[in-house]
Each structure stands twice: as structure tokens, then as C-alpha cells.
Length: 304
Image (tube, rainbow, N blue to C red; front, side, top):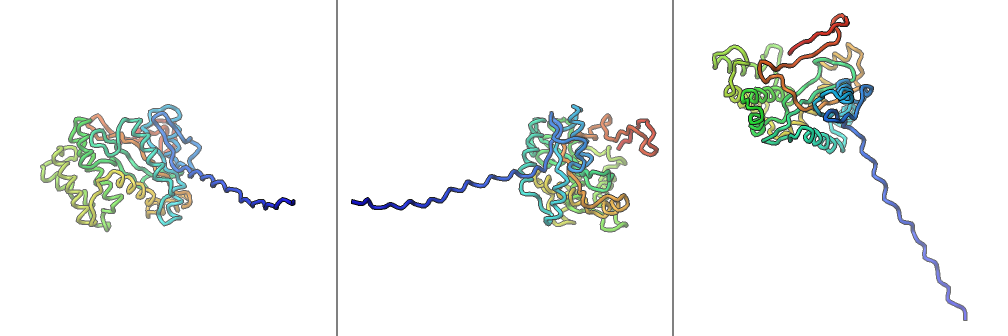
């Protein structure tokens, strides 16, 4: 008796899930025992970011931070002023590393981390793009800064400087013509007149605290929006403003005069703050290893 024939079932091989493509790296850490970049990476990290990384590699005491690459600037303008999808998570990871290195927390009311946000093209463009200092201050974190330093005047001076700088650079509250005075400077001069002093350094903590509120009121009145109290909102506003400053009028003219291609873009450097306004024995400046005018091999300094 013949056995019934059985048909072999056709089987479809299972497809393996496609391997996830690693997100392109956009953020490079420096300081705090780490240096992701080198001096020869100026095309990617800009001059400032590459040199910060190199100093960190030499174990110099570089305040920790991170650089967002020039490629992000190129992406920003090619995609309607938006960011690569992985950028926010990379920035969060880099910021957490800075927090750990300094034992501070961004937005923490007791031990606040404050940062600067600066531009950094591969070719030097001094004064052409924007900078924001003391970022992370708000009505809560300023109290933590007072507690940590024991210096209310310094804390409120840093706060009023931040509100003024952020209001100008990020929120656009600036003179609308060559004839108009800076609205923040008008308020500052009026405060000194009220207090009967001539120098900014003669204003006490109470006067500076009043200026913070007056600056915020100016922003609301002139720009129709509130000054952001959320440090994360402050940070991304500042990053966008620095990338945006690559295409401001000053930068465009400077690039044309110095044959700097628009396609190069700028990096953004986010770095933990070191203060120059803590008193008479505190200051900031630039050190030159050669005379900046003649190139002569002599050192000099310029204070600010």
C-alpha cells in the first residue's frame, strides 16, 4: 500500500532586526580629568574648544565643560534652525558629567552649577558673536550662591549681569537705533543716581536685587515675555542665540573682510563659571605670550 505523500512546508526565514545606527557624536567633554578633543580638531571644535581640550590633555586646571561641534551649527541652518535628534541627550550627559566633577547641580537651590555659553569658530572672530555668563541663576539658585559664598552683593551682581546679558543676547532687548541708549544701562544709571553713587561697585546687595527685578520688568514690558526661570530653558535659549550669532551682521561683515567661509560655522562652548567680580582681589583678563600688535616675543596682559 502506497504511503500518502506529504508536502514540505515552505518556510520564510526570519528577518533580523536592523542594527541601530549610532547617533553621530556632537558633544565633546573637556576638564575634570577628561579631554575628548585635541588642538588639531579646530574644524570640528572651533579654536576655543580645541584649545580647551588640549589644555585639559596637558592636565592644566581647566574648569570642566563641553563643546557642541561646528557640525551642529551647519545642521542648524540646513534644517530650519533645529538640532540633530540626539543632541539634547548628549548635552544632558555632558552636563551631568560637569555636575559630578564639581559636586554641584544645574538648577539646584543649594549647590547651583552656573555656566558660561560662548561661541568658538575655527578662526578667531573677537567680539563678533555672542556670550552669556552666569547662566543657571534664578530667584532660587541665587540664594544657594549666597549661602555658598557668604557674599550677597556678589550673588546679586552676578544675577543682574546675567539678566541683562540674557535679555540682550537671547531675548533681543537692545537699542533699536544708534541714537537710543541701552535700556538696561539707563536703569543702571538711574539706580546709581537714586543711591547717590557713581560706580557700579558702590551699589549694595539690596540695590542690585532691585535691579534684577527692574531688568525683568523691562523685558516683560518691551519684549512681551517673561524672563525664563527654568535653567534648562535658559541653556537652550543661549545655545540657540550663539548659533544664531554666526549669521548676525557683525559676523557676516567680519567673515567677508577676513575671507572666512560661512560654511565653517561656529561651535558652542558650555563651561562651568569662574568669577571675576567677587571683590577687589578678583578680576578677569587675557594673557598674551606675544605682543598682539607687533608679534614681538614678550608677554603682556589685558584686564577687563
